[in-house]
Image (cartoon, rainbow, N blue to C red):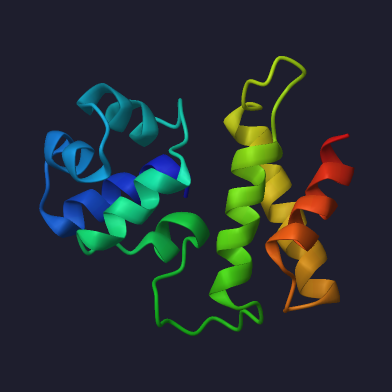
Length: 135
């Protein structure tokens, strides 16, 4: 399931319209629509604002509901740090974000690397690993 699909599902769970979720996240309805269509990916400011409205941001990022146990060994902070690193560093030579599919692959690959090595990686460690991947 894509990020946009999870975002639509979460919006529906909260009983909100696109306009209402856009306002909660501090964006325009068009941006909300583009997020849900997987045309654009929101930044961390948007996601942090959704937390205040009761959204399960962990589900949006990982596809797993908060509190569910599926055998994941990484702490939530590593997932959030990996998301932030991809959001910041997965860009082309002009500074534009890489296509969504490439960012998703980088995120998944980065998490796989981190899961195999260390569950206590810091944001700087994750940025360093991601920089090596996108260079």
